[in-house]
Amino acid sequence: MGSGLYSRVYTINTGDTLLAVHHNVEHQNHITNHVFQMLDDYSETVSQMQTQTDPYPSGTESQATSGAGEVERLRYMTAQITGKTYWYQDPDFSISNIASWLNYRRPVLVYSSTTGVSVENNTGTSNETKIVFNDGSVRSVTEDIASADKYRLAKTTSTANFTSGTEDSGMRNGLSVTDNSSYAVYAVKSQIDTSKFVLVIDDTFPSQANYATLNSRYGTAGWLYLGTIFYGDNSGTANAIVSFVQTGSMTVFKNSLVTGTSRTSNGVRLSQANATSTTWTYASGNTTSSGQLPANITHIIGCASVESGTNTSYELEDSSAARVFICGYVESVRGVMASCVIDSSSGMRLLCSATKNLSLSFQGFFDKALDGSINPMF
Image (cartoon, rainbow, N blue to C red; front, side, top):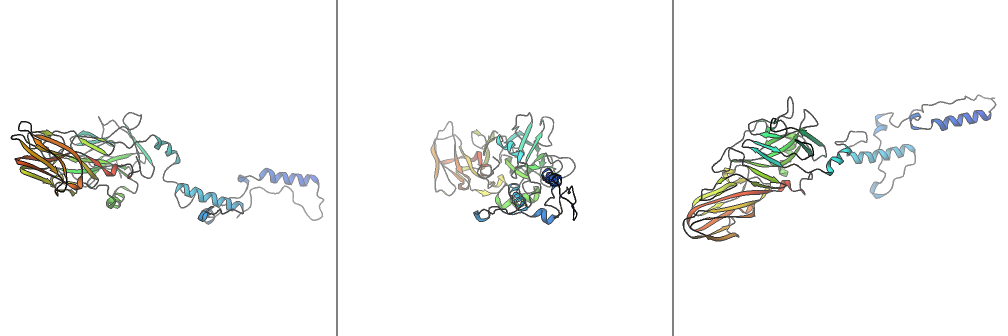
């Protein structure tokens, strides 16, 4: 370690007479200059700069015996707070971001059109959306989706871009929308402007098995799942985003579904038959036309529809006929439409005492990946 930045006032030689003024001035020199800016640092080499000491190893105090030891312990605690290897490395987020978390609520998806999904305005500023990503970093975009669709509005006819050039929201690069399928929507950090994000529609859903893929695709802590949309209702409308309202982890459809019976409902059809029974068996995936649902949709608002015509009885049960969800009587004039919440994996089976047009659909769903206990960013 080098010497301090101040020097002696007097140089005493052999035989000199020491006077009070010599003693007093030299001591005052030390007193005046004994401050950090006049003392040598403890980072003269990179090795010195990286030296850190745990002040509380294994629950026992480790007391410093020198000024250097105190500095090492303070460095250690700074690195603990930032989560970095060394105290001087830039943290992934600023402590000032904590203030942004206090009144934050993760924005919900908003139906925009048959080809577009947007994200709500979740701040006090008009047309602004704020996202807190899982590393604690905060990004905000302000955009009026009535006239622009770069950040807060993703269209199935556009390709998302967040790596170079001009940002855009839309389908993941290389992915095209398919009729009667479901898709995940993510907020993704822009690599073009580090203050912004875009919306990306993807067919990879946020299961733990897919985290490595999503991290590779969008960057670790570079994405935040916002919800699932359905493109096509597997009935009368195959090639349009199904209208919906999302609240927290629950989504309810607002479309008019042609069930194939005498009644019109809302939702997405899973099974239909002109018979005494029809069955939907759960399968994980995003192809709705094959009866698949993403694994993050753990519960649905199942709906059974029976056409009118003759007085009959009906029963809605799980696909393996182990449990009855609903049963009742079908009036000849009105038919019946009955709904209940079921766990998706149970599937559904609709039975009728006479041959009729039968339909199974779901009017909404609960998304486990949006449960606050799983996704910490509220």
